[in-house]
Picture 1 (cartoon, rainbow, N blue to C red):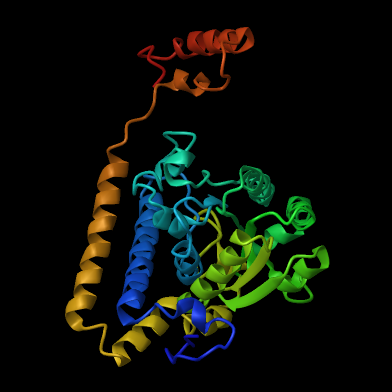
Picture 2 (picture 1 turned 180 degrees about the vertical axis):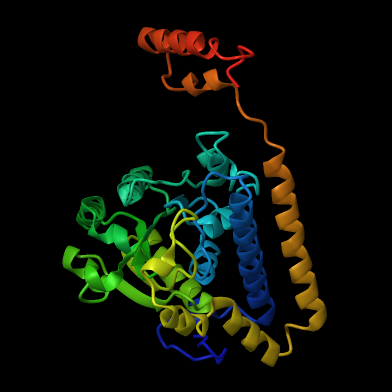
Length: 353
């Protein structure tokens, strides 16, 4: 719908799903993408400066995340991987909550029921089963909320994803499977595991699919809205393949120059999700210098607030690692806690730090 040059194209199937998106609404989506890109760059800098243990960048995937995230209703429930910071931002996650688990001060970034989004799943593909199970619960409750699972192209080779598709199709579960095909499963290009478009796999399970330009925020919004509506009205699951590109490393522990041709990176820079919206809005006269400055200032302010909050976090008491492991007291855990406490007292200062 918005090509790499910022030209608007009509689509008979999906135009109606974004008929309410004029220049002002598109400006809001652009602002979201600009802010989340700034959050991402600040988090990467924080990791390089030793303030975070690790960070999985989303650079290049802003349109896929913001376009789909802004399509969701408050009562929908999201199950994501570890890279969906943009979706979490749309769901209302606090700025510090986006980072605290990567600083190592907590085992979870937020209370899932506060924002209807589970904390990120590190086990590849497991969240698709969680989403399908939750969707079956929605179905049993008789509501029209939807569960949404986010995962990458690499996850589609995992058994969990295939099992989730089988269950979802069998029971017509109200779940949307959102695959961000960012071209690499760590260092493995998608061409090694997918000889055909990934979206072609889902119909074999009885799940209709759509392949969308994941760098086009308008198209992503449209197809996600259509999939959500299908799920809400009893149509069952939909599989979305958003074709995008991971511009940065898999995580900050990764060196993509060892497996990625620089010319490939240059080619995808020309498809930047923010640049095409900028081009369109500028041509429409909607993205003025004043608005551009205001958006940049907001992004910087968000980054500064996030940095201030994350660096102010205090390390937890070492013994809190035993908290909330079991719902009820457990003698085995109490014994381990005692052993660890005595071990910590052998260090200078006897406070375990």
